[in-house]
Image (spheres, rainbow, N blue to C red):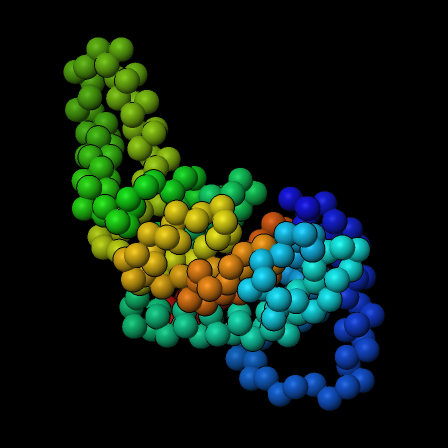
Length: 259
């Protein structure tokens, strides 16, 4: 949470260094996805954690230290984000499926909305152990959920007592929370997009175990090697996560001919 607490006048922290950089020759970088470093700065992507929380493997992505907080190099963020978007573009073009994972309270609604707009599976409440590693059993639970839902819709539960119906409704509510986002997922996705690797560590572990590619935001306290396509950026600020997810959505919708 320190990344949020310290995000005061965030754009001002980088403003001087970004203005200075414009006087130098900019490195040539292919920008296929309209990535703007000033927009990234305004969204707070560069803002890392306190220096005491650094993961050593994130050092190559750090530009400087300001007020005992690591500042992420947005040039490198743009490079890695381009790589991730290029992978997602290729995946969608081949009819692959990417699942969105974001169970931290502040991103739950955002993740759910983005996934629904893209017509893709998601987990926004809690990662159920075995979602990937015990997928056959998970599918059975999903089918049970859908079956109960259909029976209620058709009025087939009306024959039960009030107490029994209340119990079934409670079960339906729990199943909906757990499985609504993956109700139409017939097989494991090709990849997952993870908003916070630490918060959804189990999802990352299961994906890696089953050979599912991991695209993920990697803050300064994260091991970027846990992701196949790490994106060095702030994973605490909703504005940062939204910026990245919107770029992902744009690529997916455009590739599907909806943008």
